[in-house]
Length: 233
Image 1 (cartoon, helix red, strand yellow):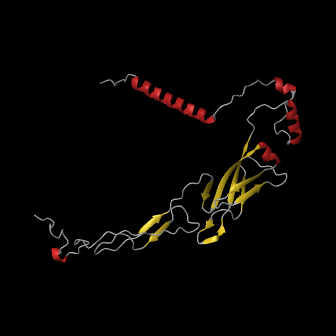
Image 2: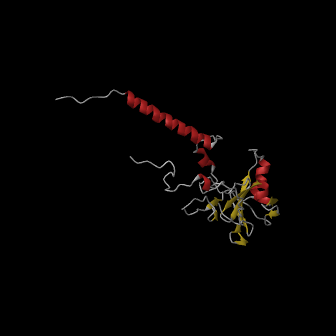
Image 3: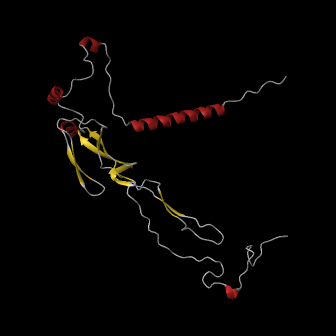
């Protein structure tokens, strides 16, 4: 029978006790601590690697490997990065969206950016605006930067009722209604309806649970039905 030599452990070499190194005890390898400075350059992307060649663990008769650091981009509470561009969300009141706005954004480097609308400009819900050269620096070209995109959301008033005189004033200022004006005869042929306030996410969740319960009940009915066997000839 064959087995590994207990003295050399299969290496084919034995070092006498008097010749053993006092540090490695004959293993030919010692442990040491080393400080590596990882330099993250401007504009480096998520998942990009910083490689230290030949700095991994060493062993006799083997090629020394590399130490690789993989960058992980930490999320920011306000800014979102996409490649070399930055995205930020901002809520406007209905008055600001219609009559103009002015606010300040504190950038990542601490600078204060004044953001304001053009005279007479109207901002629509979901609209984007861009500021050149205020995004992230390009890797290996730090003097070139991406864009800063501002995603606007318009907050409508919480109160759901306007006085009749307020409605008339708004109708004079705002564009005409897009819906067709119905005549009295057309209104007589229509049926009155009632609109209800809902939460669409809760509605969809409730419908999915109802469909799941119906499918579960159908499976129970099929399993409880008696099986008819074929007649033997």
